[in-house]
Amino acid sequence: MASGKPKKKNPRLASGRKRARQNVKLNAANTSLRSKYRTAVKNVEKAVAAGDLAKAKEAFVRMQSVVDTIADKGIFHKNKAARDKARLSTRVKGLATAAA
Image 1 (spheres, rainbow, N blue to C red):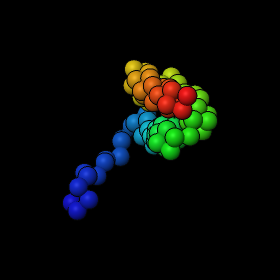
Image 2 (image 1 turned 120 degrees about the vertical axis):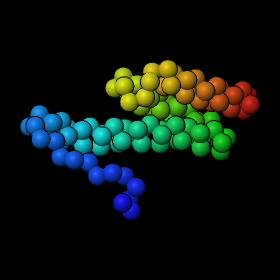
Image 3 (image 1 turned 180 degrees about the vertical axis):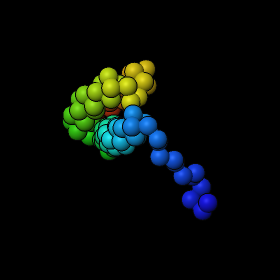
C-alpha cells in the first residue's frame, strides 16, 4: 500500500459498528481539545518571550482553565498538566521579578 497505514476492516457486530462511530466522534473532540491546550500554552510562551507581563498573566489565567479541563477529561495526564502549569508559572513570575 502506498499510504503506509493498513486499511481498517468494518466490524461485523452492531455493537462494534456503533463503537467505531463513537470513536470517530470522540477522536475529533479530543483532537480539538488537545489543539486548544497547545494553543493556550503557546500564547503564554509568546507573551513571556515578548516580555509583556500583563498579557502573560492574562494568558496564564486562561491557560490554567484550559489545562485543568483537559486533565479532568483525561486527555492529558493530571501530572503533565500540573507540570506544564508549574513551568509556565515560574516563567511568568520570573518575568514579573525581572520587570520589578
